[in-house]
Length: 162
Image (cartoon, rainbow, N blue to C red; front, side):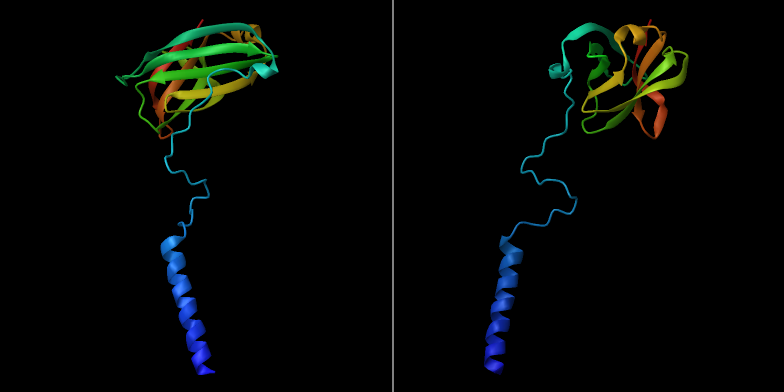
């Protein structure tokens, strides 16, 4: 009887060691494991399955506070919604930059009117309800992208919408 327990115990130990060595490691962050992970990027074109683009406009995002970044913000009306796409260059990869549309201007921003998803790897894409004509009635507005969630007072880029 003791010999059988010793044999089964030995087999169990060998199997445990083999599973530690040969089985993949547990994914502790609950995300899919990728062999070559790539950073997330935003799709900067509206979903045309929702309908055609009926109106559009764009504005240049100018560098602020010696950030070295600049870019463009596009507004496309699709099926009663305005798609807002931000595309920046020279941003820090993987850094998350909060973005908002403010009442007022870049120099004198007032209240945040629309919260956009953070700019990551230089890109973000959002929809807001309403037409582009309705959006323009709210001018003057400013699109501001901030350095970080901890430093909302420092803009890296800004565009005045008049």
